Length: 289
Image 1 (cartoon, rainbow, N blue to C red):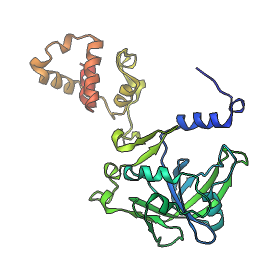
Image 2 (cartoon, rainbow, N blue to C red):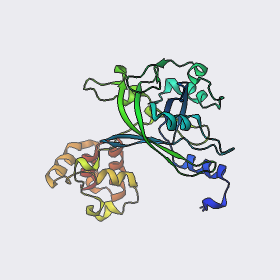
Image 3 (cartoon, one colour):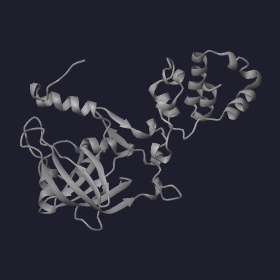
């Protein structure tokens, strides 16, 4: 394993390591205006949501590594204390990427990348009409983290209005992640299309899982089951009863006539197959048979 002292490598190399290691990251497509009302549009992947009450988003337009220049977005939010954060879906990804070009001060990136300016309800910066979710924000504070190239500037934004396209909503008004089709940023030139990799894990807070420490030793110390397998098994509230195990084994019938005489490893391999199907209860019944 390579161990790196951040002070011992060039900022550009450290920047590359960090962006590749901490990934994928959501993208804030930030729309601002300068003191004279001239629009600016630029993406930032140092971004996330940090609070719901008050509703707070934070993004960081870092100083350019190569020449220590400040981004127009940073200067604008300091001057006006307003920003619109637009989410980036797959349909926008190439236009979003183009907008990161270092155009001269005063150039309207909306025009350069072919996106539509949509008047906001509360703040002065325009929304990106093509973005499925647009978030109007007031800037509460800007925290400068340094004055050298690569230094971040935390823009703490309070949400004052949220606009969501009906097309990405479910019938119960929750957001449909598949329809939203978000794109995330990774290192170098890499991006991730979120919906191609969606999977669900039941939240541990929903139930009090039994935990790996309560497993039978042969399961806890399995040479077959992976850490993810053990995590799934540990998230059940109770283990199956002896009666339910016997009923399940009987139901297998001629499909698995040797389940009772199978070795631990053979049972673990079969249980792992059931886990791959999301059937945790029957995986446990196999392990306890």
